[in-house]
Amino acid sequence: MATDSWVNETLYAEWGQRFLVGRELARVKSDFQDIMVFESPSHGRVMLLDGVVQITERDEFVYQEMLTHVPLLAHGEAKRVLIIGAGDGGVLKRVLQHRNVEKAVMVEIDGEVIRLAKEHMPMIAGDAWNDPRAEVIVGDGIDYVRTAPAGSFDVVIVDSTDPIGVGEVLFTEEFYHNAARLLSERGLIVNQCGVPFMQAEELRDTNKRRAKSFSDTWAYVAAVPTYVGGFMTLGWAAKDATLRSHDAATIKARAEKAGILGQTRYWTPEIHVGAFNLPPYIAENL
Image (cartoon, one colour):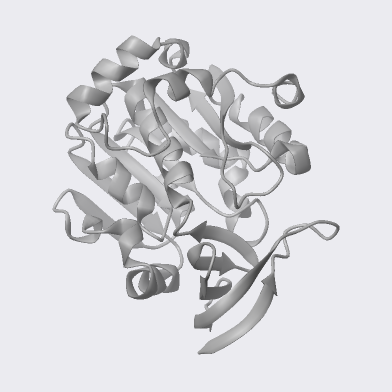
């Protein structure tokens, strides 16, 4: 449906952004959230959940690459990866770009997100849905993490909404305790922690909860244009404190071995290393 109207993001009451809607593609109320997909003249196809921008075709590569390649290459030998959320399939696609990954399990609570992404934003996931290494589960990630066998994954990637509504349970002490249990000896978990210029408490509170189950907690940053407010932080919690201390040469060699070197539009070995060097206004929350 052609509209030529505007949609206002509702994340902050006092500040926001808006998009010109060239054509509305879907507006669905699922069992968990309101979902809207539309075409924007400036950003391509856009998905909103409960009025908040989740992904746009124009800049999705920034977030997806940093959320995926950083933990996998920091680990260096990850074979089994668990993805919580990420119903658009973008993280799944990037995980499966790594040759050494043998299994990627994705657990998304809202099947409507997957359905609409497949129908209206197919370029985000590409052929990842059909990769034999992928197992896609429509279900509760909290339950999955609680019952998964100990040591069954090397890396956990959480791509969720902010800690409100359906995404709130993915930021609790219980969740991180169970994540630590299912991770292997050198395992690590990453998740989005908001834009600290506007959401400093999200990063601060989440880091405190993670620190009760992991010996090394920190964050790294990515500049995602549609996540307004400056740097986006991606939370980091690892069992091995050496995983985030590699130099660019080491990361480059691992990327070449994994088959992703030269295949990215934002991530580079140098950006990987530099992303952990935080401005003081962000680091003070850790």
